[in-house]
Image (tube, rainbow, N blue to C red; front, side, top):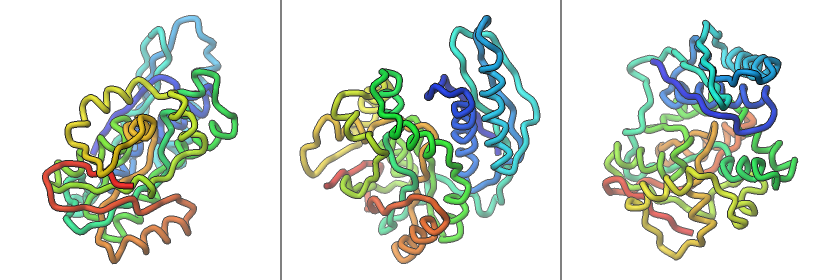
Length: 284
């Protein structure tokens, strides 16, 4: 299996940016139940910018790939006005055990790893309005590989698996629901947010991708109660290196959450799978 992802900096520190971009690219392999084998660097870098910045970006990416048990096998660079970095990743997976988005079954429970809100926190950072502790918490979350979460999902018999990135929880949830020909019911009160995310959303610090996500995915979203604007913005917040959303039998869900938390992961039951054809139902 192969996948690719790259983007401009989301944080100020070059090393952290490189490592986050690498974790984000590796996540696609984990979302399919695989293990990364090797990766190829993809670099865009401005002429005249200090090359030590690029060195740190590449070092961050290489060390994250090494943490995943894979290797950097080369790469390609181009000159561009804005730095960009990511990876093309190749991994291995047992064809009989490969995870997809399309296997969720009515009656399944939904588990999400990692708290949400990285988009609003990094937007607050860009506007120089973010608390340093909030930025540190967001970076720590984005740096965390989804390796253990993927392994535990397979061990506990998950029916469907996807990672939560740029299309937001709603967008990637809709993909799972649509491909599985079911609906998802999400509990707003069960969702976990990164420190500061709610405050920044209430202050209108949302990334541009939020509006695009809302415009596209809103037709498939229903709510049992009126939602505040900031609540909607958080639900549609584009994530960078977010967690894994998994659907699995109810009798396995609590054991999975306990196993994840015992291994240092954050996880929560956030909803359930119900009969339908691709819609997302939001409850409080």
